[in-house]
Image (cartoon, rainbow, N blue to C red; front, side):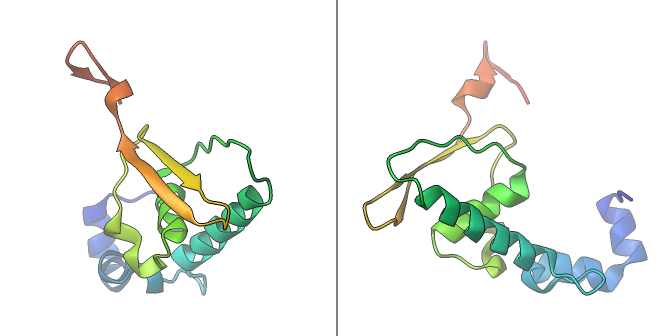
Length: 120
């Protein structure tokens, strides 16, 4: 079921408020989706770090990309909305020998513009 924001606010006011103001504690049927997402992001980084010297292209949806960026930078799920990414935006990380993430580029979108037209 997909709801517009206004409908969700009207039908599920408490849940909607939690999602907007405290997303890390948003709960649906006993599941905390953002906390689960952060766990998946940690697992992804662990897998990537097991192959030093390799290059990876990760294509994903906005929420998991936010989680990947935040977990790499040591931010918890309470900081979910601290990073905004455009659909199609590119982010580049480099990792030092200790496995620490260094954000080199965030949300690059120049490839989405041609002839003064924004493609999305």
